[in-house]
Length: 178
Image (cartoon, rainbow, N blue to C red; front, side, top):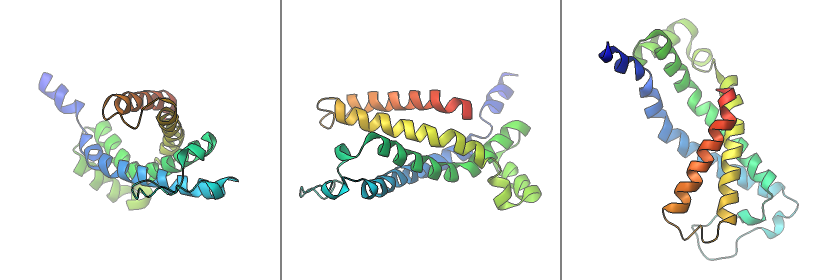
């Protein structure tokens, strides 16, 4: 009985292990793209370019972007995140519900529902969860980065604590949509 418990506990974990690294990369890319978009839309965007010679810094200054625009960029990232993870979420949920392996789950979804309409069946639920979560996540992240003294000099402690705060708050906000 204990073997089945552990086996069933991890049904559907493979899609998340595959999707998460790529989805986070795409989420951060979408967030920075969203920041570029909102910095161009900002009435004060003409003075927001970073004039330092550091090529690793973005061409917009986060401290000059209003917080509501940071939230908007985070929400854009949440939308992109939803479209990345929705197919994997569908496979995971199907595998967990019917106690089948992930590859069998994908085959069944494809056979009975088709590729696009099948794997994107839960896109509205993903959007309801991910848009507010990403908006809150990146708002807290940028607020912490700009209000905690010496944040950028910290290599482990402040980023770790900020990430924990962002994650916990995101879960509180996103749990009703999940």
